[in-house]
Image (cartoon, rainbow, N blue to C red; front, side):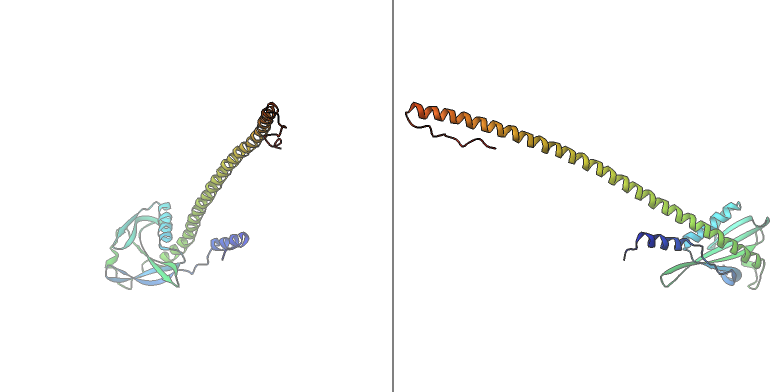
Length: 229
């Protein structure tokens, strides 16, 4: 069922409204064959949006990712208000009722720390990680809007291009119609001229036929019909 334009705009605006996120919490994540305590948060975005949002957030902090054992690791970053640390992130895709969301797990380590060597109940900087995840959620929301804006700008460009193409088609069709109208007007004028020529030739034929009838002593009959209108 097609939506009317106002309803379509309303539906799209509702889609872009800022979502309400749950706060980050605490959970367990497998890290090199051992469970570790991690901060965790679920966001209503696709895997690619969350991955891109995290990357953008961390790059603004001056950090680049290093993929290690299934985790994105941002080494020696100042993401915690200037405190130097390593941040280990993992994003899991979650699909329920045909809706995709993403779960982010975060571990914060000392620079160069081997997280795998931690005891399973080690809560080192879990609270800080939860706070950072909450900040990330807001940042990822902004990143998602930027992605949606870019996609919509592309749709606008495609629509503009299509409109320009249709206008070009209109100009070409109008040009062809004008040419056909000119040809039609010329044809009608040629018909008038040719009608006059036909009548002239018929009249000439009648004159000749009449002369023949007179020379043969008959009554002029008129070989052709009267002039064509």
